[in-house]
Amino acid sequence: MNTKLMTVDEVATYLDVPKSWVYGNWQSQGIPFRRVGQGLRVRPSDLEKWLEALAA
Image (cartoon, rainbow, N blue to C red; front, top):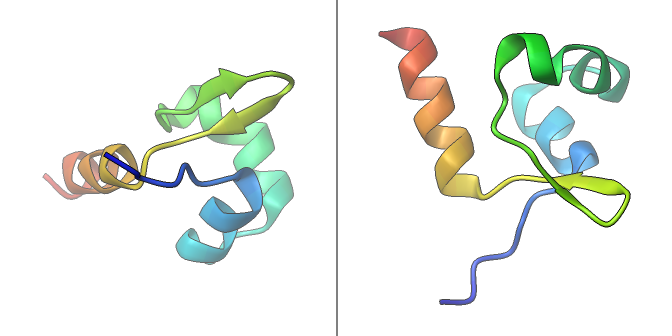
């Protein structure tokens, strides 16, 4: 399994929102980030599941 984790920059681009929005809202919105060192990362599949749950 060689799935690249997405960074905050990549998530912001994917969601078409500013990076500051992602940083300011990831916890309250429930974006499934994990801390890796000092950064935040998310599996693309987890981000897709989160988006699907928002649409439901």
